[in-house]
Image 1 (cartoon, rainbow, N blue to C red):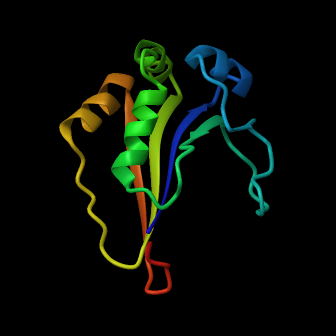
Image 2: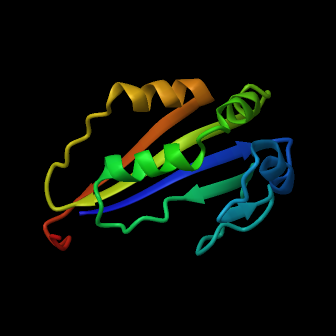
Length: 134
């Protein structure tokens, strides 16, 4: 199993560097509306900033999400303020690569945290028999 967990901040009106100042964190990736998306011909329609989990990809999904919660501990009010600005969004994105059906249950504290910061949750599940077992 391999897990990729990111907290993604997007805005139609706030520049990526301003997003960083607003939330109090520097991103691992940043882009501006009009930038070309990597490995495609698509242009970004929004400004954005991403913070990626720094944990090993073979750790379970909940461990990655708990890392993200600890990383943003104490910044919940800033995140909520950002998410309440018109045309600004926060999304916890989880890409799960597995050779079988992984557990996708979320403890109350995770859904509570998402609500406290005004974030949505996106899960992409890729199941394949060719994914290496850990």
